[in-house]
Length: 513
Image 1 (cartoon, rainbow, N blue to C red):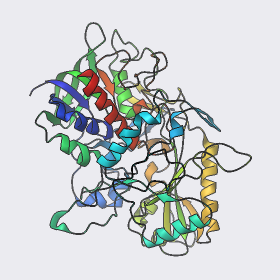
Image 2: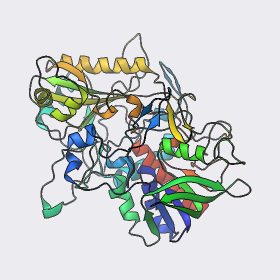
Image 3: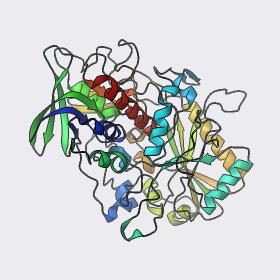
Image 4: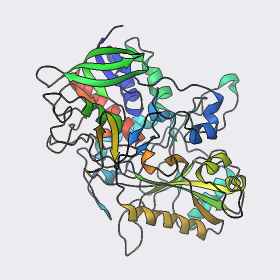
């Protein structure tokens, strides 16, 4: 097996796979190392019990929380990373998110780049990942003259009723930007119906995940190679401590050592930080590139809630994730609380098995089946703020996630705003929390929006990476997953990770290679 490459990328999720595609045409010898395998195509892909209750596709490893209690994270290892299971809601951060924002719970700090730096890459990312949307419908959307390449997904009849009701109440719901390739033809050219999508792997490959959209295209180049089930365990440096010398990986019971001119991490914010900490040596005693003591710190994942609104009318919707609400993104509209609240979007449709997995008994007067039949599902996200005490660390080699939620009052008010708007419509009578995405009562296990552990910036004393996500201290090391975030905003991080990988790719092609 050849172990010497020009570029090695660790991880095949949103950042790693996208960057591989961006660099593929350089002719450089590129190796991607992925610790998991391919997600199997099987009937269980769309089985709620298997996916959400039995956690068939999540890792079997256990991490520690801040009290050293073990938990099983909702982390997916495999080709395409967590994007194989995401809901493909691909939002741009708001223009103001890149600056200093005052929240009720504290300060969201300024980024070392502006929205303008990412703007062309957001557009490139939207086209690449088949994002369906509508410019001008979101009252908080950042500036962009070009239309989406793909128009918004249509609302099914029940969702259209909810959409219209919220609009009549004075809100401004808008089409949710979703990454999906509706032009793709499945076996036998059968018509495709969006259904088991949000949180499920998609065996039809219509979902725009990093494997289908980016990695597969990158692997069409002869100079790009993928090695699956190769878990990177350590990075070593040369005698000066300023360059990665070797990348150690376990593959099928064998320890392999790779070398490359460039080492690029995209393991996810938690695992990239953990790998840097595991790679401590005499030059980097606190962890690789960690003289600032910021590797692993400022972990963010959003304050999230999932809500089932039970309506009078049944909801036969197959795919309900077609609109979002940002009316409360920057302000509550209340005189006594002039702070941002957050973001609301639709969720995939509940079924009886998901609800049963969340609740030991049905709500009074309802069966699981009746709840599912009438449920309309919402996802709420509020920005959690960077806190150095919210951090990733290692305890005898085991990952520890020390996390205390903050900015909670804003989230409480956001939830109340949604309930008030739905109640005002006169079509909803009951509201129940939906915890299926949170692995029951352990919110810390919900790591889909992980970010912030290896932040970028201008000053090596207050950041780990420079503005192009290159280590301040290790010249051939880059990190392109969500680690680089300075703040979390309140929208899904995937599109920003993808756009940044495209930006970093251009920098590497033009300034580094």
